[in-house]
Length: 435
Image 1 (cartoon, one colour):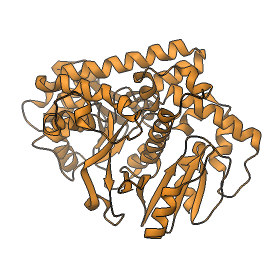
Image 2 (cartoon, rainbow, N blue to C red):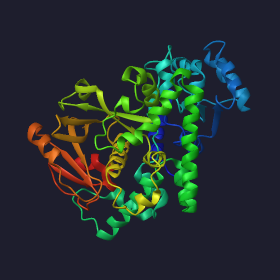
Image 3 (cartoon, one colour):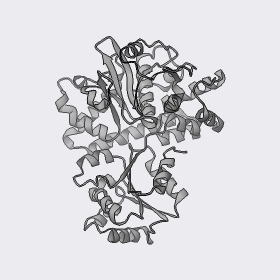
Image 4 (cartoon, rainbow, N blue to C red):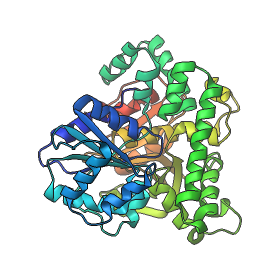
């Protein structure tokens, strides 16, 4: 399955002043597969080392930070000398060895000719703890679960994915093609973007097998809570994680700590929540009252919504039957809006910006997402079906007069200048539409 990030990896390989690379990403989003495939295509050798599978590897980094010695000993483990220009060195699950992360400073300074990538599913958590982090000595990339365009390329006919990629704002989208895209999008809501779940769907078209994969992924996340998080936070992590679908199902989707468990307050749960965010499992979308730059300066950290890193995992954790999503069952309403918001957020984080906010004005209006796209602040109103009335967006535009605003829905409509109408299945192309 083709991943778009391989283009960024090639750019990193060819970049002047290349530094060691840190690849972050939630567990089972495809980091190891992508890096090995990148190495297979663009290098003569792939020297792969996994700190979780081979605990003795840590000893290579324990003595000192002599890059020559480290490379010699890694070569002994690999079985041959690691050549600087023809081999890709992959240090996987590197969060298990903090000294290996620190060593990247010395690889940057003393052995820049080597191509080295550090990857890990809990790197976000580890980097917060790492005392000797090599600031300014590493490059960063983040791999997310598969986007809808990546899913479409894997699960749909190849010419359909090509057509979507070449589509331009203002073009007429033939209705039969639009209907096919809606069908694939509903399937993506069900399957999500975890590569193993997508591969299982493409291979079997059996939802019971897909759900078995999704449950195994959920189980692995919860095992991480027990294995890697502080023992005191384990019950809190599980409680927050399990409460996200419940809170998104409510009319007011603002996350409320006391709804996690009666009597628990924000100060009791903040550390556990930060662990989930650092692990990449959860996205925190804070409220802003004024959409001015920099957006982070106007964020209210006490008022926020929580979303999950993958819409398919959200559906499975919520125990929402896949038939309900596939058939757009009438009694599936409020949660459908939240699932659609979760999908849009994930697509925006992958394709436009790595941070999003929401805007509200008292209890009278609320715009689902506010993002920074280049030098513009863009409000985005999300509709789960074909209803495109957007009273809150109109109030926002009247108050702040943004250059661009976006409405996204299932409606086959790609027009507008000041208010761009973008179908949900094309929302990842929003940046291109604005250009």
